[in-house]
Image (cartoon, rainbow, N blue to C red; front, side):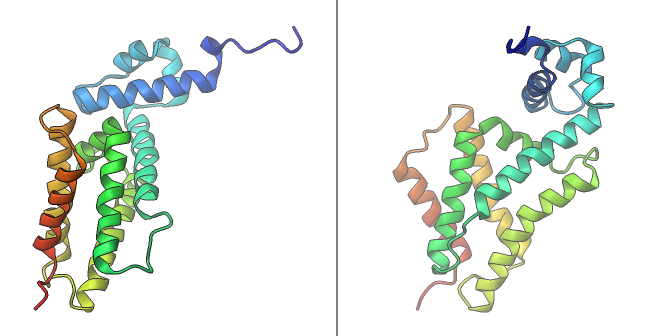
Length: 200
């Protein structure tokens, strides 16, 4: 019938979106090796054969998912970054953007964090991951040259701040802590004190 709406159940794009959402949930909960394509198909409500029309293997599906969400994470951190502001204000922007992304997209954030060292990561996924880490490291190097950030290895600095926030956000997702504005401000102040050169 002319003008008839597509049945969403049989719309390829909507089926692919269901596969994507199902994969995110299962990879987050069961991790890579605990997830099978059959599980993803069942969760998405599609036939096992259908999922292979979109992705030939679990590895390809995983990496497509990782690239998608890590790209969004990178954009959330650095798009329209306030480069005209001072170091402390820029640090606040990074912390605030990281926390907002994690609160708005808890499963994708944990998915990125828990899988970024996996041997199943392909070169394209590793490249998107490097865009995030390299961006933060470049920021730290720039302010180290201006004697604002402590002269520590940039990976160590990243571990202090990003690692600390990741642990906190995991506790939030588990319902063990409430991310109140007062708590987030105090945490941010602590991390800044850990990486910044004290003013004399």
